[in-house]
Image (cartoon, rainbow, N blue to C red; front, top):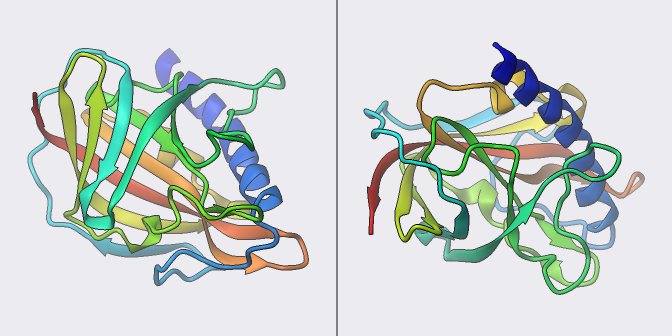
Length: 212
């Protein structure tokens, strides 16, 4: 019970910062990922057929992310919380376009939802690491290379788009009984007035196998 409460607590804080970070750094771009979301209401984009989850892996920090179907590869930053207890996201500068694993979540392959975040774009540089995340299809593969040399292979279950004002914290960040993965970025409609995307895109995936 204590673990679940803790996870939901940081999840609530994380949503607020994701909304802020994507908005401030995307305001001059005004483009959206190539996905078919309903930007002002919750929407689920496709659902894969259920698969048997693989056995959990021992803990090992992730070092690289690859999504072969989208041509995405990124080394992984390891980010925790800011001084105000909000979730840190990649800051402007040379590592802005890298994805980041939240160090307070399970390592990919452990039981629970490992969380990896990335920006969708920026005013200065255009498309960022998760610009095409909204095009990811159920059943696609997401590979996370870990420090122990294993690659945790996740199968995408579904992709959802949620308005930031009604983000389902418990659904996204709550405890799970199997090894799962969450990929999160901004998405939906870009609001030129506020200089922010109105929604978050969330990919749900589960561990299907591992390889070395």
